[in-house]
Image 1 (cartoon, helix red, strand yellow):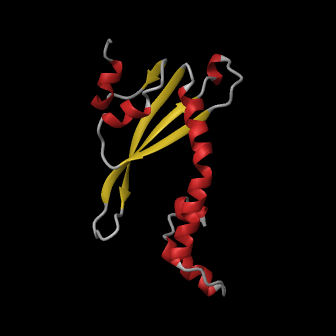
Image 2 (tube, rainbow, N blue to C red):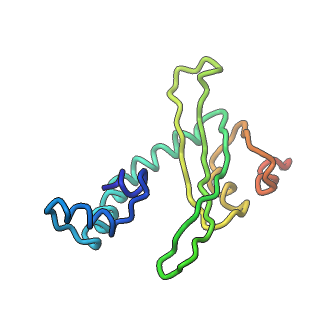
Length: 138
């Protein structure tokens, strides 16, 4: 169900219809509750991954626009997925690489500032001006 929703971009109502064709009645409300429960169960994992990535000496970051359909709206709006990568294998580190993702509804510099607030190290980023305050001398 989660793979269908997040990897195959299948809305829950479509998944409900697919299950029904196979003789399994699962309402969209039930599927939504299951998604919420899974997200709650994965929150500690997400938090640990965030701490691991931010504890690196070096982080690579970038953002990607994504179209988002909001409930009750016919037109998609643009949100952003912020990506933070820890990968020191080229420097000979035996520590495993990791990626942490965050979503924001807009493209403002306050989001990477907040995400990177505990980070102290080398930041590799593109020329998006929202990173400027992160690179300013303190």
